[in-house]
Length: 408
Image (cartoon, rainbow, N blue to C red; front, side):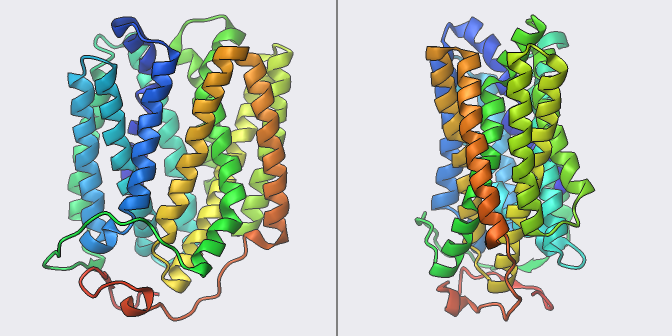
């Protein structure tokens, strides 16, 4: 399951280094590239908000399989693309696939863990997400520099890996009793009760700060490194994404024993320090200092994501609030997409350096506020209690997924 998360998140970042080639081929500008990215975020957010209960209808295993099929369809659209509008369609389909997968995989990782450890599951999810985003972008950057067909190779390789993932997820012994006969399903707006909404509000500052930093580096990181190193090598420039997301994947695994509150506070502190060091390094034209800040920032993102995920997973396990995970990931994708669009527009008007410095300062202030909220109790865990029955959660008998015996 961790491997599947890794592949799908790699697929989500793989198109980014290819936009320069698409721009040369079809003669569109930065604004169009930003719109293409926005289509991906829109697909993910709408899927999480309108189809967040799909796993409760199909079963988690079937939903993950459907997400993998959908991501392969997006690769086919990329390969057949003849203009920017088809890139928008491909990214929209890709966003739908990622939206289907993220909350379902988060639930599956917690269910499949031997001792039901939401902290270990959150660490694995955070590590797979970060390293997938990192290596997907770097792999595409290498394809741009060295592959004979850079607009085909990344998607062909990812399609093969996704189909292998589909075979693997179908081979996992069922861990839920899914409905044998599926009733008609229609999209429904995600609704939350007071308790899950309170949990989401408590983790919102931490999630927003962490993913906004990711958006900052995704939007400007490659251009910043290209300016520092005076290079047009896209693979070399994409190293900053590898550093940020790679450290974001390593930190949760090294510190997976931290509780939700401790991980959130530590992560936010590292976000503030990392952004500050990166801004200073860029202003001083010191590449080593800039990359050191990127590494610290990445570790902060990984820990803050692990802490907030752990808190949400604990609430889901304790109270049966299945709608929390879709809401949580919708907030995360909103937090990463708005900065990409906003910073891209600011960079076009004011320049890359002022946009990076100004937005970095805003993110640092947000991270300070998030750390204060988390330290005051925003990361506290829910005490276990009896899982709610389907009727108590307001689910219909046909769509409720019954857990295997012993599920908490």
